[in-house]
Image (cartoon, rainbow over all chains, first blue to last red; front, side, top):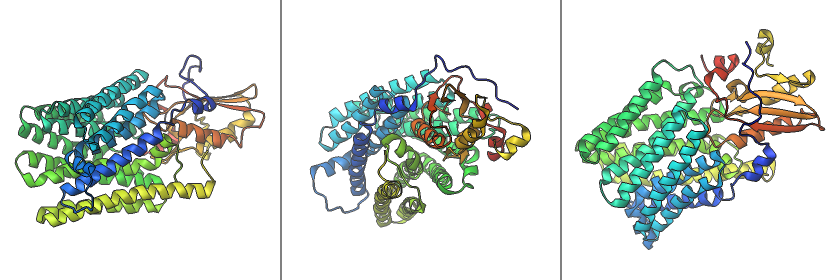
Length: 383
Length: 117
């Protein structure tokens, strides 16, 4: 069996590694990523105060972080790191502008300039849509189109947030941005396995319902929220059934770690979806579970899983992967269980769980720093 | 070629040029692993062609997605692995292309077996 001969190289997007290095606009990536992590830590402080954790912080930015927790975490942090990831993939200097704007807008929120910040998030979302159009033009495939849809959700959610209308729909659209982005990336990976017929169609149907739920949240928050939550739970079912993680979890080392991050995340996605539906149907106690099973259990678990591979690519920092990475992962999922299960019984458990969620994230950042130092110790300073 | 490839008479990618370099180059490329699937980039089917001519080793390759930011990392690793097996007077040229797009048909039989096809 032989592969079909490929066409010659002439006329293709091409370059040698030497040229590639000279055109890597990574000079911008590191400071923007650092700013994104800083706004995330600030956003976390705001979240902890919301969860009733007493912090010895009195500064003005802390109260701003408390008010704008969701925008800081989703737009200023996730939006920025996803934007950087796509900019590095596209290799175009202009593609770094959207994440620069979203990270800067996070700073504006903390400085007490919400109007400018929200305008910034709309602009960043629009820029990110343009970046994704460029990616689709490079290769039009289901997963690149889904990434574009995700970008449109970010822009749409930010527009609602900036206009101060339909805040429930805005939040649903922001989460849809993250969920579609992850769904698209997972769909791309499932191509490495023999996919059962109908799997892609099923995913598109589930994501279609998710978008329908997002749209319905504006006129009918309760109905929209139930549809949205059930679509999230169905997506968890799809991922648990079709994702390559079910197979790669049997591999050793980093591959297994990544798969465990994914599989644990899918469990929380199901919990988050059901809690979202329950909270929309009137069960007020499920709101914290819906937002944080989704944001921390699902999305942040993906970040933890992919950071050892993506961070070296975007920040040009070499990392030595080791078992230490399991510590923040276990801390994240364990503390989330404490927060949500314990929180259903008493607010004190919710606060304790939230404080430990924050600790897990700080531990994760320290693990990344340790992994970078370990690599340098073994190999000398990175080129 | 791995033992399995040899048994099947399988060539994981079209190769043009000095036969003496085919095996070491293939082995070197097989050492570049996609960490998410623990599969070599050869088995994923990212190598479209290798041409050795006029004192240069030209590798034409792709990625599974244009939205993936790790292309440079993978290409650095390819260069690092090829460096010790390519004669010192040969240049290493890596070319990333998006046409034709990668499809699951590019996965080698060994890759399929490892991924449970």
